[in-house]
Length: 228
Ligand code: SF4
Ligand code: SF4
Image (cartoon, rainbow, N blue to C red; front, side):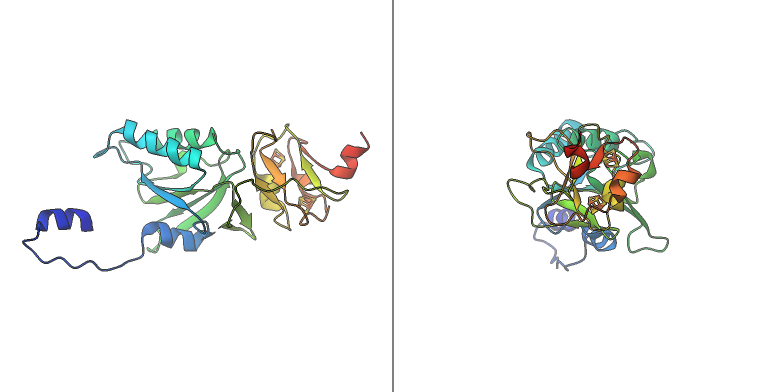
């Protein structure tokens, strides 16, 4: 509220700014470290900003692969904007991209959870919820949402007989990503690989837990693929 305060004061009243913890930073600490690299904050309230302007901003951050925090995602009179914004991000990010949400952050009754772009239900959010959508550098580590430094080229697919391989049958439910004990699976799309996930080199031990949990039979150990 510092900006309206400064505008109204207009130099006639002395206004002092006091640094505080924003809702995005507080929510980030609850979820893990999703804001560990470049990110954007966007309010989905179209009370004071035209929806066309908001949508243009969402498209820009989607193309820029920024972690995106949505403020004011839903209200009693606005119930479609969050779904629309997530759909725009989904045009540029794999369905397994981690999505974190925190309701009433730092308040009594605080609740939080981590889902995926494909699995997150916008109806679960309200005006008190902050929604954080990961970038291609975001993964889930021991149940916490983490954005690493990222690279321009993205991770190289894993190789070697123990490595798991995600096929294009993947529906992006994110179950393997949340299950992998080595945190070896990441959302990923680079134009060369049609599967929305990849397995990080050197991390996969070939335990096969991802293969067991996949409801789409979309992930295999490389040694199985090589015997086809
Ligand atoms: S085989 Fe095991 S370690 Fe490798 S990606 Fe699947 S769950 Fe993770
Ligand atoms: S469990 Fe299967 S369908 Fe779900 S994200 Fe993993 S590979 Fe894709």
